[in-house]
Image 1 (cartoon, rainbow, N blue to C red):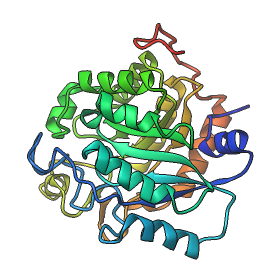
Image 2: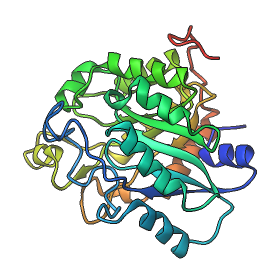
Image 3: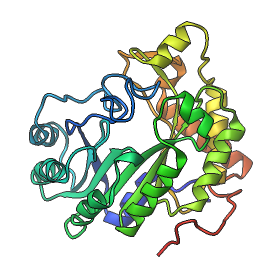
Image 4: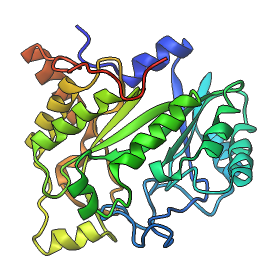
Length: 308
């Protein structure tokens, strides 16, 4: 029985080989940090953004070239602009940065970009669509939660309606959308996580990444944690939460990640979050033992944005 639709199996069936991801820092910032939308960013985001391990001072080409020189040679690769908002720049700047990375090696078959919904416009989506004759294009949107109250508390900086608009624009331009969900946000319960999974049923989503919230140095969340105002998820709550979300997601969604990790030098809590392989295996083991699978409780509904 297929427990969930794994990223590895999708890559193997689509590209007929294993595919490696090259994470790069494109030198972008975020409208929720530079004052355009807000300052300080989301309460769980630090000065380094999501790509804490990346070297922002290095040119994009140098980052990609270094990856090829230090990793085993694979047949195909994903170029992943991971850090901050990878569509937050004028189109001509975006094109130059994407081209710089893609030009390094013809074995790059996917351009994947992490960004915010409020950094997606028709013009930017049209630019991304122009790459489809060369590579597949994926855009990762950090929804995190469908609960507006939580989003406001976490200073995420855009309403749910903006996410819906971004998905519609990207879908119209044939760009695959990947959505991030965060478990353990302040004030949320397992029922809220399931509601976020059910919310995604309304949209043509290609992929999803589930993360548990961790506390890192240099964030507002770290201040809340030290003040005793935030308690991280237990390992048990995380495992059971991921299982609940998986059983409610569309079975066709590709699960690019079902748990995350944090850099050792910045992680404050929880300590159990360091063993990602164990978590993945335990989630699989429990689901198999209980006869559970992705989409088991999926409530198919008419898509708000019709699929093609």
